[in-house]
Length: 394
Image (tube, rainbow, N blue to C red; front, side, top):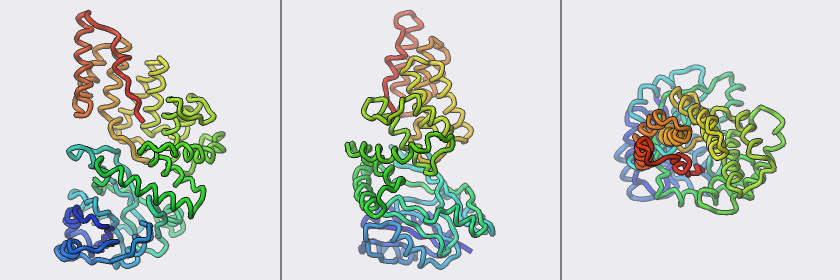
C-alpha cells in the first residue's frame, strides 16, 4: 500500500521534476493538480508517469486541492507543492506511517531551504501533509488553507489520532527574490477570504503579517482588529485557541517598543502575557531578552537568551508558528556575547562570539566584537557591548 501524491502546480513548472523525482517508488499514483496548461507540463508528467488533473483557477487553493483529493485512489494522501520535495531519508518512514491502523493523519516536518546556499531561513514546522482519504477531510481557505472541521475534532469523532512523524519535506518557495510577489498574491487572496468570512481571526493575523513584511501601513489596522478579539481572554493564563496569536503578539511587541503601535497595555504586561501563553516559543523569549537589554537588566537578558539555546539544543521549543531560524543559534550567540561583554565577563563573551562566527550571516559582526574584546583586554578600549548590539529583530 502506497499513498496517492497530490501536487498542485501553476504556470511555473521549473521545480516540478525535482518534486516528482523525490516521489519515485513511494507513491502508488502521482496526481498533478494543474491550474494552467503548458507543453512543458505535459512532457514532464509523461516522463514520470504522472496523471494531470486540469482544474480551473478561481482564486482558491483549497478548492483545487479538494478536487485533487477526491480524485485520489489510494487510502492515504500525501500533499506537496511543486516547490517542495520529499527527503530521501524519509522514504522508509513514509512506508511505516501508512501501515498505522490508529492514525488519521501524520504531522510532517516542513523544512525551509529558501535562504542563501540552501540555508534555512525559517524554523521547521509540522503540518498534517499525510492523511487518510476520507470525505470528512476537506480544506478551507483561498490561501493558507487548513482542514475544516479542525483535524483534531475529526480525529476525536472517528476515534483516531494525529501523530508526529520524522518525515521531512523540503521547501524553497519563499526565496527572497520571489517572496514579495508571493506576499502580494497572498494579500489579495486573504482580502477575498475576509470578504467571505468577515472578522475571522486567523486571516486578520495572516493579513497583518503579510502587510508588515512588504511595509504596507494598512497592517496596523488589522493588528488592532485582531488584538481587540484576543484581549477579552487576557484574564486567563490559557493561550487563545488560535496558535497564530503568538505571531500577532510578537508583531505588536516589536511595534510598541518602537513607538509605532499602542495595544492599550504596557510592554511589561505584554511580555507577561507572552510568558503565560507561549512560554516555549523562541521569538517571544527573544523579545523579552531584547527588552531587558534595552532596559539595562543585563542578567535577565542573559537568562532569556540562554533559555533559547537550551530549548534549541533539546528541540523542546514550540515549533508553530514558524520563525526566523537565526535566533536558535548564531543570532542568540552574538547577543549573548554582547551581553556578557557588557557585564565585563569577557571570557564568556569570547566563547559566544566564537560560536556566532560559525554562522556566515553573523561572522563579520562576531569577528568585529572579538577584535574589540582583544583591544579591551589590552586596555585600549572598553564599554563596547552596548554599542555593538543595536539590531532590533522584527
